[in-house]
Image 1 (spheres, rainbow, N blue to C red):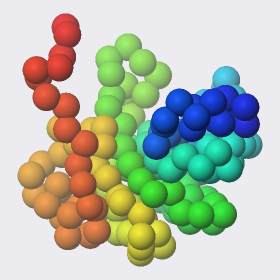
Image 2 (tube, rainbow, N blue to C red):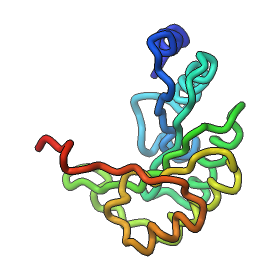
Image 3 (cartoon, rainbow, N blue to C red):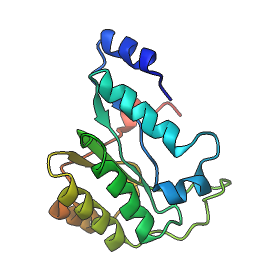
Image 4 (cartoon, one colour):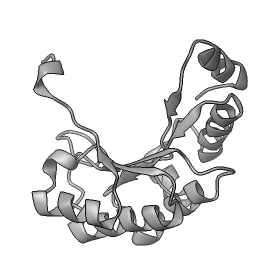
Length: 162
């Protein structure tokens, strides 16, 4: 979370983009996050935008939410005062031992639909495939690009420090 003063300090220091995902819809958010509110997230986005920093904001899908929640997250993004310049759409990476480890995987076509809706309602935003991409088939990734994804975040082994 950022205050207005912190956002201005980051801008003064030369920051161009700030990533701050909404994670989900307002309705589903409380099922996943308990340490801050949805309004806290929206306030941070407002501070970032007011400071003149580009916004990178998307969310995570496949956390057990309903299709309406994916739509609600994108609707919230699309109804911000300005669309985020960058919209990362993350697929949940299930990690053993965590509360969401046993959530059934999201149908790949539902993920592709999420990308398509983001593209349609935020035509100037860069829609990015982000976390979880490594677990998608090449076919699903290709469909995401056909549905409107502009780019893909990659992690290379050269930067892993395990």
